Amino acid sequence: MGLETLVHDPLSDLIGVIGQLQEDERDRFLQTLSRMTSALAGLRDVPAFGTCQDCSHFTPANDSGYCACMAAELAAEEIDQLCASYQGPARGIQTEGERDDRA
Image 1 (cartoon, rainbow, N blue to C red):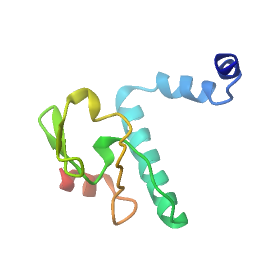
Image 2 (image 1 turned 120 degrees about the vertical axis):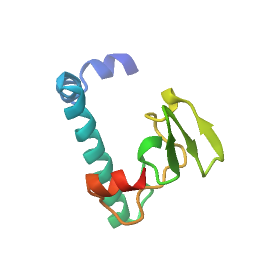
Image 3 (image 1 turned 45 degrees about the vertical axis):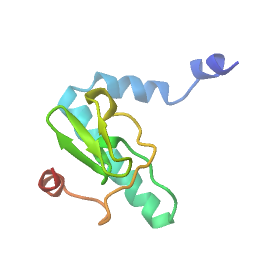
């Protein structure tokens, strides 16, 4: 039943189009989308969600990283997955330059 429903998922076309973007375009789009959802969650005072790499607990280290919330090293394949303890930027939407300063 669930897989049959996914065949008619109206977002599947959007996902397909996003998948066709060049990697740098897709990365910028996903970063922007993450910042927007964090800002909206803050405005509505509801929990935000995002990836480890966009979480304020995350510190990059070479190809991997460190999660200060979980006090754990993260493997490279983990940093682009959804973060169970996600905490968005405290100041709301950040510019790309502000994000670069955090790293």
